[in-house]
Length: 214
Image (tube, rainbow, N blue to C red; front, side, top):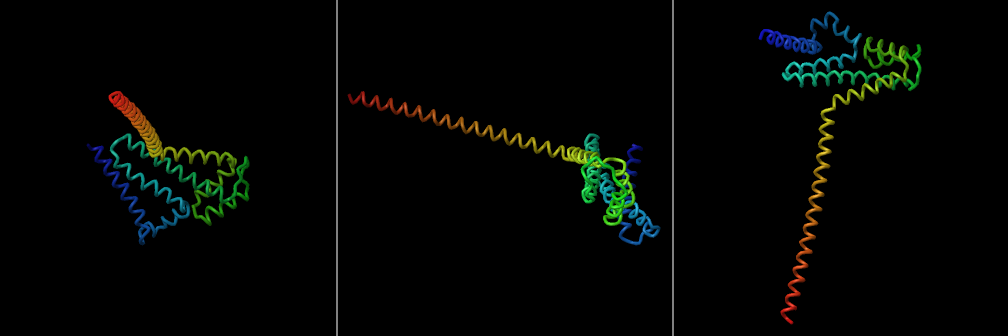
């Protein structure tokens, strides 16, 4: 019971800190006065939105009681983070016209990356440094392949349940359509047989009438 109480308190402390950091942007808060947000803007820039998204989505996991559902949710949040970073990096790669080749970045590539990521797009020093380090240490081809694989895997884990439901619905719809088609054909066959029987009975009645007439 004590452990549960501590966890509840930690949850609300976490939520309070997140709310305080967000609301602190809207007025002359203490954090703004000491230059906290300027520090964040310099080092993280727009990358903070990825972290903020992760932080906010993580709040919901505190209120999930089922361990299995919580694990699934946290896994999706993790792959959402991977997807976001991979998409951003691919965006930079394409904007900088980095070729799909087994080449390493040079000083010119690094200079363009700094101008684009830090000054133009304002994604902060950390993202700029990591991207510059990546293109100078890993060949472009392998970067592209890795990022595309990460995007594919992330989308699979994020949308796995929805994809499974969609596939299940498609299979059910096809089975239903097939069954309805079979029932329609069976009904048509029954009607055809009934028409044949009626025709034979009609012929018999005609024959009986003819015999009586004779």
